[in-house]
Image 1 (cartoon, rainbow, N blue to C red):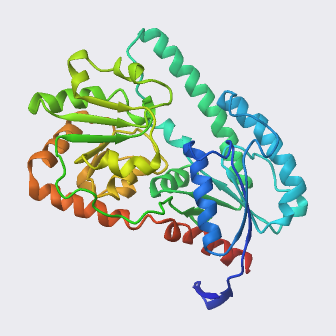
Image 2: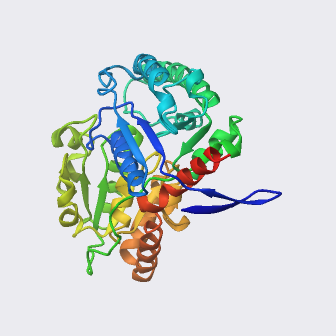
Image 3: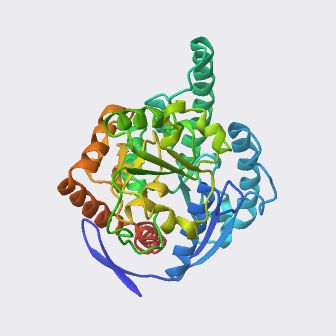
Length: 388
């Protein structure tokens, strides 16, 4: 198999040979963990293209670090990964690892191996805004933000070193690329290779209930959990029968009761909460959902959003990394604009022509995010560089 490439001077053809790829995940290999799911499905997509993939998590590399605070985990796992790559990296054509965890030069023995930093969540964006916090003592919240900003800058120093020592950076959305360019990373060093799904998009309900709102994500501040009560409050003022279905909430808040505490008691009758669910039950769970809501403040992709749109459910989200590529512009609102998000949901529920247009747009966009397609930019770049 061969592909044609062009540069400024000449066209050239390279032979696409099966690659040996080592993928090093900073988490245990568990599909229930969002970060791990990316690596597991990405590895499968590479294999489906005929490549040989070795996928290792932190447990396989001999260091159980998932219980450690993030900054300590970065140092501990980074050293373990460095030692492993010094021994093993030269046996592979490509080595991929998370962009925070390898602030060390390439081993001499692996000079011909492509070292690729990946990102399941680009933390550089956190310099540009503050995540919402629960209501509490303003002074304590202020101190927490100072500590969080200090820890963030420590992580970003590791990230910038890791990126500088890497041959390429693989990011899943265009806003991530733009943000890295602002930090001084060259455009030619960055690949945009989105995540995807193995499902075929289809409309699962011919008569969607437009006062049933679906949310698929953990219930935590980054995902916009503190915005959801205000959104539901605005919706029910207009239509008291609105129902909000929260699926997969288990995370910072483990139980249904912990989630309910964040909503005013009069809204409890408008809530349906499932902290966990089985993926094979999702079609059934979403069959009564008419509209999706995704108020996340920062994503790398947005699997919960894609799970809704590829089933023909139009969604409203903040215009942030991930959702900005998954949704048409008329369903994106500024980060934190609860009023505009609520108004757009209300328009979807009352304007059938607008609803059908958005449903069509969302479904069409979702077809682009099939793993077989989305890994091609990375694989093509690897083949191109390794053939030189």
